[in-house]
Figure 1 (cartoon, rainbow, N blue to C red):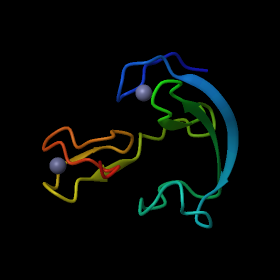
Figure 2 (figure 1 turned 180 degrees about the vertical axis):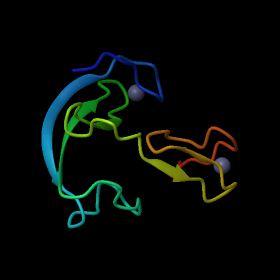
Figure 3 (figure 1 turned 30 degrees about the horizontal axis):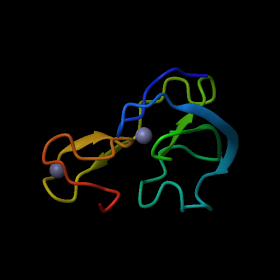
Figure 4 (figure 1 turned 120 degrees about the horizontal axis):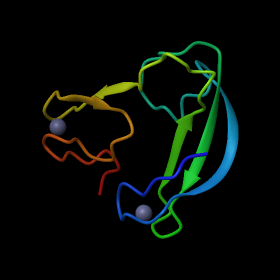
Length: 97
Ligand SMILES: [Zn+2]
Ligand SMILES: [Zn+2]
């Protein structure tokens, strides 16, 4: 379990649940991310009690040695960690606000 704050509003995130994702079949959560990990992945879901933002993390152990998945900003081409809500370079907002 982790201790961290919401990327959006700074509220302390709360543990929500643990889910098992079957990668390569359910693409709804990862969107158009390439399948960097094969098979199933255990993830921990956290929710912000203030703005309801949902964050998920691959559990340590199963993904050991793996780097955090990266994604490329469609606006400026900057490659950054996939869990940024906005591009750190040009502030492109992936959540469409
Ligand atoms: Zn929040
Ligand atoms: Zn950008």
